[in-house]
Every structure is written in structure tokens, then in C-alpha cells.
Image (cartoon, rainbow, N blue to C red):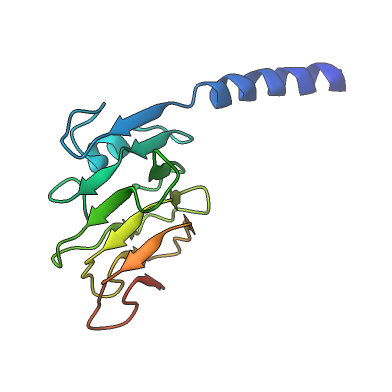
Length: 152
């Protein structure tokens, strides 16, 4: 009986892991979605949003919100110098405020010219604790605290 239950549970879990999708976003909007936020909104937990090489800026590419989902946003190449989110001194890169845990991953990206208050490039709020891995933070600022990252 125990063996049957274990097999049934494994059967339910494997298709979910196998069904993880990858969404490609290009700076010119010609990828699977026209902007990063659109890809995040369409993604299911476990999915990945890959950013092609280039500079992402403007609406839909800054002030990004995972909406509580455990997914990954990362550079397609794995090199943070290839995919850049430029906030142009008017926004932040990511705002985590829906209780995202370590399964919400931002990896291999450069975040530059973020200007949030608090958290110039990334703000973790209301119990959120995402994973930030192999990212470059350059020329970000906050008049309050956390020029690059602020977690409260």
C-alpha cells in the first residue's frame, strides 16, 4: 500500500516538473513576449524567463513584479554583462512584495540606474526573500537606504 501511494505521488509530481516552460524575451520585443513583465505574468511557477543579450528599458522592463510566483528571470547566456536592465534613473528593476521565497530567482543580470525608495535596484518587502545570484549592480541609488538592494 505504501509503495502504491509513493508511486502515485511521484506520478503527480513528475509531470509538473517536466511541464516547466522557458520564455524568451528580446530587447526589441520580438521574442515570445514583447516585454519582461508580460512574460512573468504569463509564466507558471517553475518556468524560466530568459533575457536575450541587450539592454532592456522602459515600461514592462522595469519595476518588475513576480506576483508571488516561484520562477526564474535570467540572462540567456549566463553572463550578467550580456543582459542589462537599465532603469534610466526613474524606476527600480524588481519589486518583490508578494511573499516570494527563494524559489523566485533573479540570476545573471546587470541592473543599472535603479532609483527606488527604498532599494534602488531591488526591493524585498512584506516577508519576501528571493534569490539574487550572479548579478551586477551598477550606478543604482536610493535617497533612503539600499542603493542596490533593500530587504525589509
